[in-house]
Amino acid sequence: MPELTVTDVNKTFNGTQVLHDINFTVHDGEFFTLLGPSGCGKSTTLSCIAGLDRPDTGTIALDDVVFFSGRHNSFVPPEGRNLGMVFQSYALWPHMSIADNLALPLSLRKVPKARRDELIDDALDKVDLLHLRGRYPHEMSGGQQQRVALARALVYSPRVLLLDEPLSNLDAKLREQARAWLKALQASVGITTIYVTHDQEEALAMSDRIAVMAKGRMVQIASPTEIYDRPAAREVAAFVGSCSFLDGRVVDAGDTYVELVDSGQIVHARGRFDVRTSDGVSVAVRPERVTITGADAPASPGVNRIRAHVRSSSYVGARYEYLLSVGDSQIAANCLSPTHHGDVDLLIDPDNVFLYPRHELAGV
Ligand SMILES: Nc1ncnc2c1ncn2[C@@H]1O[C@H](COP(=O)(O)OP(=O)(O)OP(=O)(O)O)[C@@H](O)[C@H]1O
Ligand SMILES: [Mg+2]
Image 1 (cartoon, rainbow, N blue to C red):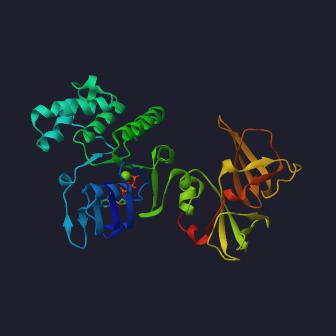
Image 2 (image 1 turned 45 degrees about the vertical axis):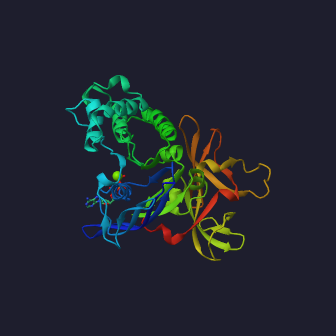
Image 3 (image 1 turned 30 degrees about the vertical axis):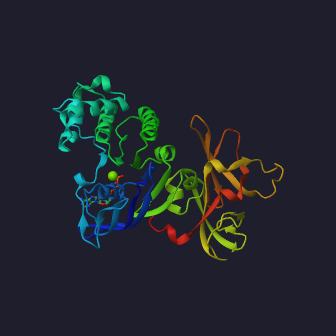
């Protein structure tokens, strides 16, 4: 089973450390995504795997073939790694036809001429562009060029596909279509893929597992549902989906009851959190997990009930987005009804309340 392992990789550019102790394993056939805000180190991680950047320390290996070892001072150049890469700027040769663009990596690999045409047609067929093999890049749309770049990365049957924001130049609608198409292609070819994006929806929709990065570190590596439903750190909760954060203080660490600092109201969080009584915490809640109800609505045992005041609501097509105050803090709630005003109650299941140490607030 081919597995790509990245172990204890650190990387510094001009005295600034941009990757800190990066560790992950990508399994055979997996669609693995690096997700995080601009500048967090996604492309640098991918470049280290491709061999375009050289880490300072650590190990990168595909099965038992070591591409890079800091300890043994070994480094396999990019052309020796047999990886396919698609860059954000798809970098097709403008003076070459599509077929010739695909022929180039094959001739570099000394594939016999007779076999090249067959491989080119096969790769173009995979991306539904066989009928355009004689065209030049400027005669194609951005989306088509992006597919050519993908075909060029697939044409020599790489062992792993590295994709750096490959859909970023498409408009929103095309991007959604391309997402489904690319995911289906990856599954049918069965190729291990590392995908870089800062688009959380794309990451959630396409990935088997996601590694969320922040400031050069891996913060959480898990399935899309786990990342969304159990964000392991405040950075993850804030970056993947949206979240309101309220200041709290733990009043009972055993059962994780927390007092909201601004309003003195008590909320119950059911996850397993590493907190002690009287710790300052950040209480996080997703807007779609909050139900707005009238203050006179019947009690719902076991569910948090918080007094709040409607500040504003805006219509965004599929729902109304409410902004409410809880003491001096604000909390967002999504709702299908436009009729809530004034004082209301918010119902929040304890499973949907996340707690993070307040010291994680710095710099987020
Ligand atoms: N060749 C380089 N020389 C110096 N600094 C670099 C170099 N490449 C990247 N960096 C810095 O390393 C950090 C990580 O950059 P990287 O390109 O990996 O981010 P990214 O997560 O891919 O961001 P984006 O989403 O904007 O593409 C940034 O602060 C960037 O300025
Ligand atoms: Mg990048």
